Image (cartoon, rainbow, N blue to C red; front, side, top):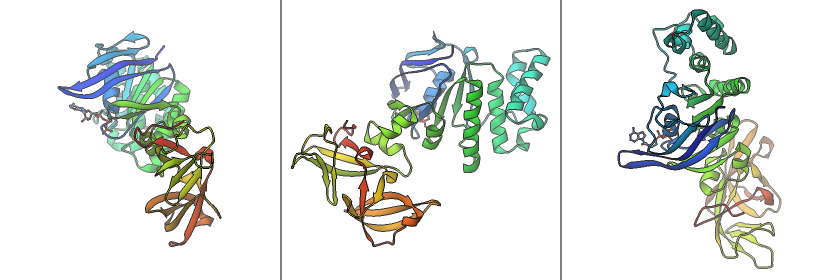
Length: 355
Ligand code: ATP
């Protein structure tokens, strides 16, 4: 049983409160990603989980037991650090074996475990090498091997891929997720990279300024962001936002802004006259003969299969992703359409989602 539960967790450094009232539970075997911009507190929360940082308020439970004051060594956790923290003067074998050697495990058992981890991580041929003789991806795997042999129920990852180039990062994402599917250790994974979060997580915990702003599956967070902040953070290229008001003349509610008039579903809870921000993802916009959004093409950027059109809609740069064949010349007037279910609506004052 290796659930992890945070109950009203807070953290202050001296007089400065950097985190407050963090409460959520990670179930046994779950892969949870703590996501957020630099400084939001995700690393601090992970370090508190590991026991490397004290807890200022609240309770931390691992496997149903309160571990607030428990030494890192005595928690049911293994941590993989951003810089891997390998010992440069030790071979790969000794790096992976280190915690078992310290615990004075029998030699045969140590060898068996290291060979098991090396086999899974494709490191069997590298056990005699030293860290400086390895590629970045191989070093990353050695760091994971060190965590794997410890027989713990919870893996903690602190931005483990940030030192790798883009291609290797994409590859290691898959490796770490496959490793999790195989070992099923409860995993808490910290990153500021939303693609890592979207592709790896069972559940994303999105943090901002020391608090949780939304928690849910990648699909839930992408499809129903609960605020403008979340909507703008998740998705690439980022969601387009247009400020306007709700009009109910003629019975059906609509969103109105200069150059834009979009019919809303009849069951929308937006109030007539309410100042709102409409959000629409670049992939949800399409070129149409007679669309409700009118603008002028500023620029076409080819990204490979797709083209990102920058369209000036009443002075706002609105991004539209279209197939290559629909590339447009700058200066061309254009009208755009969006499916009603792809429209996100937020109250402009509270910035919260309107149902
Ligand atoms: P990053 O992605 O840049 O690592 P993060 O989301 O992990 O950011 P934290 O490192 O957890 O953020 O930091 C959260 C807040 O706590 C920040 O405002 C940071 O300045 C502050 N902080 C972190 N460690 C300390 C410390 N030892 N002393 C004082 N303030 C700290």
